[in-house]
Each structure stands twice: as C-alpha cells, then as structure tokens.
Length: 302
Image (cartoon, rainbow, N blue to C red; front, top):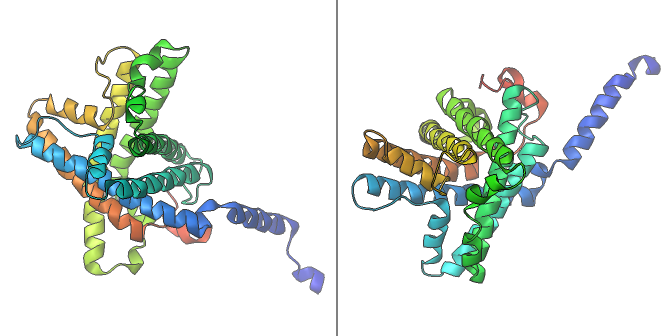
C-alpha cells in the first residue's frame, strides 16, 4: 500500500528541479527585492524629470530636452546633492540587478516563447542601460564625469570597430522589439497588470496604477522604439548626431510635423511613467510561482 502511494520518479524529479530553481532565484532574496524596489523609485524620478523638461520645451520654456543622465546631474546640484547621488547610485545598481535577474532567472515567468524571449532581451538591454547611468552617477560622485562623457558617443566610434555595426544593429533591434513595441503592446492590452499586486490595492490606487501604467508604458514604448531606430540608423551612418538616447528621441519628435504637440504628449507620458514606476516600488510582484499564473500565463492574456 505504501509503495502504491509513493510519488512517481518523474514527479519527484520535477519537484526537485523546482526546489533547486526557487532556491537559487535571487528575486526571492530580501536584499535584492529591497534594492530593486528602490530602483523603481529612482527610475521613476529619472523619467519624471525629463518629462517635465520636455513639456516645458514644448511650451517654449526650455531650449532643449533632458536626458536621464542630465536628470541625475540636476539631482546632484540640489542641497545634500552628494547624499542624493549615493541614493541614486544604489537605486540604479538595484534596478540593473533586477534587469539581470529577470533576463536570466525569469522570476515573472515570461518563458521561452518568442514574446517571452523578446521581453527577456529587453530586460537585459535595460540592465546595460542602467549600468551606464550608474557609471555616470559614480562619475559625478568622484568628479570624473568628464572621462565618462568622453565615452558617451559610443554610437559614433562603435560602427568603425570590427563587427561594431552589427552589434549596434543588434542593440537597436533589442530596443525596438524587446523594449519598444513590447511595452506598447503591454500598455495597450493591459498585460502589465499581472505583474502588479492589484488584489492588495484599494479602488483609487488600482485606477491610478492602471491608468498611469497604460499611458506611461505606451509613451515609453514609443520613445524606446525611436531610440532603437536611431541606433540602427547610426550603424549605417544615417544619423549624424551622437544623442541616440532619450534626448535624441525627444529631439526627433520635436522635428516632426506638429513636433511641439508630440513633444508635449511625450513629456506628459514620461511623467505618467515616472509616477507609475514609483507605484511599482510598492505594488510590483518580484516573482511568480507556476500555480499563480493560471489562465493568465499567456504573455498577452493578462
């Protein structure tokens, strides 16, 4: 009778694999979770501030848009700026680590489907981008920002290196599909909601989180798609400017027909995303078990 009720070998092997995976999953470590949540707050700030500047530029109050690195520079110029920069550096390190964890360990269960792979590539690209911002922040803290800025025009010198253009195209495509278009779809179809602990929110919080998430993710996805297109264009020497990041994308919007209207809309969208990111610091799920997914396991069904 005991042997009849014993677990089958295949079931035991499956359970052991799950135990090993969750035991190694950094997303389940408290210090990683806390650093990552601080990272959401810092991410929100460095999107909200450029959004304000973009809106002011659209209204004729500013002469140029602001990059995320410039936003960090502004933070450092405030009272107790060095202390604030240390907090920013810790938050950026935490969010970069969260990008690596999501790409490698897949705690949110994106899976190995084409959409899942695209999302995880986007997380890897995000980690690289935030590591770059961390380097810039450390440069501000150590007074070596001039050395950092000498290497910020990497889209200019990289195509001249062996396989540099191929690398730049690959990075650009990751921005377009892994970050840009994917975020537009997530915002439009509400799929980001499965990553929020909506069941713990009140009615007002839920409405704000969903509304800001939709507007913010679609806006950020459009900006990221433009950034990816600029990177691909730089690989083929079709883009003469070195500012291919957030600042370059906002400039491209400003140069289009009805540019100031588009720029103002982008500014409001970035402000919405910054606010949504701050809410994510409290409500974002850091991991999901397989039995939590249910019918929402499909990337576009939740």
